[in-house]
Image 1 (cartoon, rainbow, N blue to C red):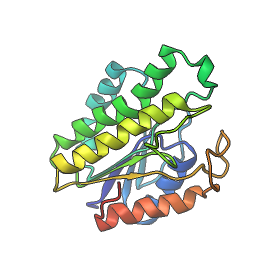
Image 2 (cartoon, rainbow, N blue to C red; image 1 turned 90 degrees about the vertical axis):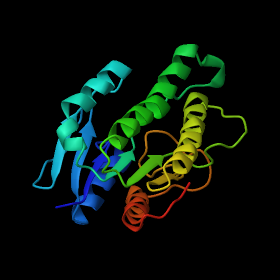
Image 3 (cartoon, rainbow, N blue to C red; image 1 turned 30 degrees about the vertical axis):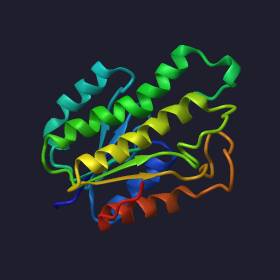
Amino acid sequence: MNNKVFITGASGLLGRSLVEKFTNGGWFVFAHYNRNKGAGSDICEWLPGDFSTIEKTRNFLDCNKDKLKECTALINNYGPITYKSTADITSSDLISDLHGNLIVPNEITSYLLKSGNLHSVVNIGFEGVGEIRPYKKILPYAIAKAGLRLLTLSNECEFPDINFSMVSPSSLTGGEYGKVSGEYTEPDSIAEEIFKIVCSGDHNV
């Protein structure tokens, strides 16, 4: 089997749909989780990992380097969110969301790029990512995802032979928090969109 994908945050709502979509599509999946391990199979291996610090993230990558270097695709789905009123946000909240949603994807992407096998990278945003407007409950998250979009665009320019994309869905049905705007989106439909992007090699930023 030549097609192997590494999915971070694979035990979450969208992550589970991504694992199912790619395994059903004939891919071997390396699925990252922190606490909630999913069901393994002949074409899915779950990898425990704590990404709360750069050191722990790098340790995870080093411990799994022989597996991850085989991956031709990466989906940066891991993305913790601070959900609180703007007036209550602390500098620690900003640092936390920037770390989880920008620093971690950059560390993982940079590491896998060195293998020379990576063909496709999909970063996950949210509806309206990068819009210059007030955010009432998700400001640190919005700031971090805007940075991730800039990183995606810059990597797309820097590495033209690799498909860098960003998928920014509206709030997912069954998600922990209410919708930001617009309508809810089914996780399976987003997983289908991402699968098509990875398989086709199209850019979508």
